Length: 550
Image 1 (tube, rainbow, N blue to C red):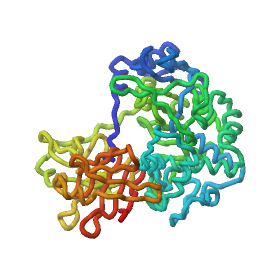
Image 2: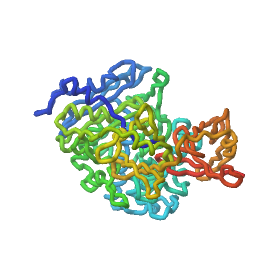
Image 3: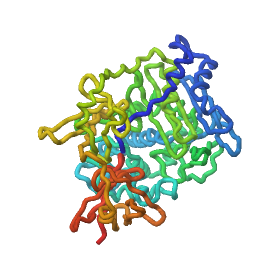
């Protein structure tokens, strides 16, 4: 996992160059809104591609619901405002609401030890509270990474809630001490599903239907508890592969972290119910109360919602992505309770960018981020920083080097700022030299004020010989996921296989460290200088170990 370099879109510039409307002194007409969304969703306005549904409301009044592209390429069915699509992680706020309803019922507290309801969880020193589960601060490892390391990534077999629950509760270690950091993980929400069922005495789908969907009139919203169920009006999801559209549908029974079928109309209604506090102020207000880490930092994540700002105005939102679905739901209380829902059925469709482009068109008067105060680069002063750096969380290795006269970190330009820091994309980085004059570190600051440290490892990429690779070959086992990995040398490269037919080719980085397909892999050596342990690291599973089998 590289330092996060946020993507930037050109939709805002497109709208401004096209003469987007000025700040609205009165409600825009349907024709004006249609012109805006036609520009934003122009890439999907086709009968030969998937697309998106969009809904816009202000002050509780729906201003526009519209569809672009096709819900079913084979059947020729277009996306309409009534088309049902899947939520991705936007569903988390509904699961958090289910928990808060039980809090309001007096059946649990957010500060309760989760083991009071989920005794299968190991003890990890500090207790994991219910609140930790819902704010991604528990330290729990991401279940989807773990099943992928078993050789069964999501989409390759049918996973169930029971499968996910067992692998989550089989982990003897956390990513970090409970509450110390924010690390996005679906595992907490899958445990929350079981917690709701045990405390309420009802199936999760039944409880949410009776306590949330039916009372609020969300008549087109339900969970994908059984992905084989025929759902009238459901859009198929797609992914572009080798120039062709292919189906990319979720095919597991794992819900609560995602897996909600819904429409833009139901999402607009939901946002309005949150604004009106229909389910009670105690329930709704808790959803947007940001989490505080043990070091006192308030992070942007609340209970299934991201609470922050966009262009200086308050934004309460969440994005979602599952298989070929991409979504975003946002509300802007300071903009007359503007609410925007975007649901797409194409993998990678930038639903967040589409939402922000609509906001930009409606409110071009909003403040724009100040330009970074960059200065001319002194390449000579950066030359001592060349080399390979390993981050101290998930152990990925990044390369700082000069390319065509420019210093780059893994290919991204490093631009100096006037205050002595550096910019990589939109992320600020600090360079530091320890008192010994040899230990160099890069420190990148997250949007929440937390930071990730990258320590210098070595000057050049490791280029191991065949004997060095063969000394790492062998069998490594983990009872936490029930897998014995086979590490072998094939065609001069090191490979790792969790099961027959699944092989990952490793690319050397620093000594005894490699890049895998979606994670870092490194080895520690034992007697005779052979591999003793194999380690994995990723953004959602910081450190996972498998020991060598004699």
